[in-house]
Image (cartoon, rainbow, N blue to C red):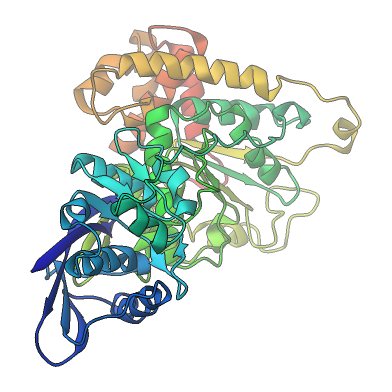
Length: 504
């Protein structure tokens, strides 16, 4: 008799169904697992054997073979323990085989039979719902998986609880979704003194998801401004929250099964490796750019990141997804993020400060910002200089709009964009617009077009730069409540495109 249970193998955010087949046949006693298991899967036989022993279930003196199908797909992770145990129990006729065939299971077994939480419960629940199966997962993972309303989720604490459920002795109740995570306290934009141009640029960036780089002397407020960007971003929509949480589920970042409506804000250190930023490593896990999906990736000390890491950002910025290629698989992760970069103007940091500029002007700045290649710099929609704030201004009371006021304007602009792109799949914000649609929604009036052509010829804008100016101008018009893109909108967009410290 061959008994079957089902589980999943993760390929990016996709969970592919894996059939766990178990056969108990006469022959030399043994317990083998086949189907390209990695070390952690191969070790499942010892965990399963000991966990069953804790339930006073002794394995027969026969040949036990576990096959993980499809056999040519690599199997990684400890979540195969529970489905292997269920398939074996069905093969021993301890639990009904038809019940295990109607479930998708994942979970790691302790030696005493308790179930240890694993990553990926949310995408596993999506896969179970698509296959019209019930998901069996550890109790600590049930609240996370239960967010997929289309899936029935059962979350036993131990293997014994699962056995009692399948035998009808003590049926398990369906798991309940976790609590929606509270919105974290954010810093108010109104606390920032001065830097009105930078605050305006942050508002535009938040409204249209435009990439932005800030260049300024140390202590001018770049990091302070970046820390206040989350406070002006609208909460995630339900669809965005689910797809973002699926990535975080694979990384084990969901807190007690709760799904957050706050947009991600990731700020990796400049010593991070390429695998940490882009994704990869053991199991091709998502990197920072994917963990920032639908949110913000803040890269402070931007030129200090390794050149190879910076150059790998170019394609994900354009496509909104990253493909982690390995010899046996190509894993795809979404990564539509707002890139916010901060940099000093030179290595000593005071190139733009006439009172403290170093003696290596201008080579100090050219060498330092030269680490950012022209093609990468061309992908920033907004480039601004952040000058130091005068000491006299620091004594003045805070002025300017609060985060709540700016957030209201940003939300209104995003609502306009949501209606605009309702019938355009793959496009949500002005930063996504391209082709004929971009020309249709962002073509400026006659004066604005003449200005843009003059600027393009004078400063040698690339075709990418030209279109990015149009997108920014469209966002500025949305913030202004204007249906048409006019000359003032184009002029402001052009002003954020040009930066005197480094022309590319």
